Length: 342
Image (cartoon, rainbow, N blue to C red; front, side):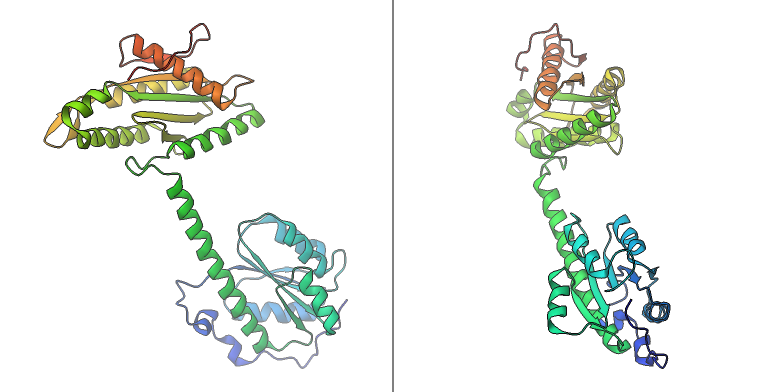
């Protein structure tokens, strides 16, 4: 246990200033991370709590290392952890080591608070994964300044995370239809297939192909073709649940990944999509264009791979084309796989 905080420790009035004002960032822009305080000294814990509350945060308190670790482990959110070095069950320095081994999106900024002040001890704490280090008895103004630094660093990191997510979404998005592109929908297919294997829930894929799309392009031009693709994509989205996935698989072909759907439910979805597209002509530049689609449906069986599922759905799609188009077909293993018609 570290030494007790002195009883004459006072929090200066200058620490009442909010962090937003101290950093020059408006309150709407300020990152408000979770603050976890761990100290087995009741006096120290109470003083830290009072200071953090005055700075505008709601701290989460722990009186030993095990409790602190549970708090830190349970949520992957931006977090500042103020940890006493010497605590029962798990020491603060060990918590730092554990935190750096976690694979997380959001960063936990750790500050060790201790009576240890030798250079070798400071080095040991930083090498264990601590971002900052303060010795007891601490000064409230200095702690506030260090928290400002912590908040600024974490805010910058959150901006980088947001930018990375935007880039990731753009990399997986088809520019014309605003659906997932081929890479994005294939990633979704792999993820949902793995989930289906773990949970043993039904899972289906649906291929949707615009009938005679080449003729539309050749007759009316590629701008009309683009209008048809965009409106078809909109109608597809409107037919699907929020947790389904839909992407542009090829030129005029769309792939739907529908978790939790068996072959009957997936067939019904295929019919719903087909009818929604052919029921109302699509408005293009200067005239309305009646469009139909052919739909191939395949439900997952125990040993399916993404390639096997796509091949089966394509076989069903070929059957729909061969059967006259503007129809939905469910995969049957008795059918021979052939490439889809244009």
